[in-house]
Length: 324
Ligand code: DP6
Image 1 (tube, protein in one colour):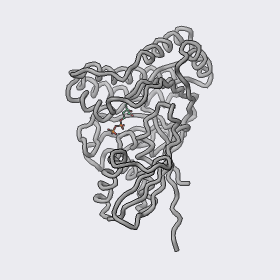
Image 2 (cartoon, rainbow, N blue to C red):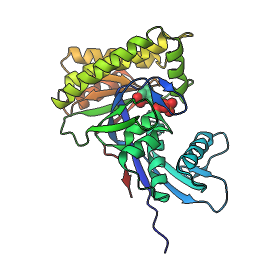
Image 3 (cartoon, protein in one colour):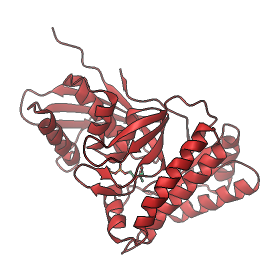
Image 4 (spheres, rainbow, N blue to C red):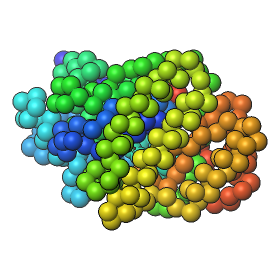
């Protein structure tokens, strides 16, 4: 009898303390721990079928990917085959429920869903720690999308010791996120390349490693106290410090667009008016704003009044890997 293969679903996450730099490129071992919040709005569904030949085929949003587009996934499947000593090739069917305009990278939810789908199809019976390790080998930030809520990725120093662990999977906290999208197409410098350049050439990189260690400690205390203001302050400072590593790289680069700076100024104006809003920005121009249920409507209204060419998406706290 054929066993029913379920689809794996993984949600994306937003780092409050960023992962920015690897000490091992192949294993994707980071220089620092990082800490994120899994979101409920944006997710990837992936289903694997064992192929009856010896090549992998990848469909993204029901379209067949060509050799350039599927390169990273094929390389990952080769790594997994070697690691778990099997020969099977797959038909990968993956659908991104990340609105194209939401401004979230799909590699976190994408590789977390792919790792979980491999686990399901090959019946590897991996526990969540092992799944996180498997997802990390695809994309660092994917290691955190195995869990819901607040999640910490422990840097570790080899394949077995670098994995994510939950801090609070179901936090009862009045925190909600507004993603402000500046439509600028795909980014010119990927996170992988951007972080490598920062590690190699920013004179401030050693300071970043020290800063992250203390900010992780502080933000965990703020999370335990459900102190959203403090969480926002730390997350904003951490994000800006990460972007300082791109500006201080040699040659220097930035993910900011003029609207990114404008939104950041608006957030400062909102805070002067007593409205809770803090910015965090990944390797792209879009700004994610940490709000409360009370402040989010005011923040969205104010931004839409000031800037006509941006769109906003609201997200709440999401859960970990699901099989459907
Ligand atoms: C700015 O996980 O996309 O979003 O491991 O090279 O695939 P690779 O990088 P990736 O980097 C994410 C960078 C970030 C910060 C974060 O999510 O922690």
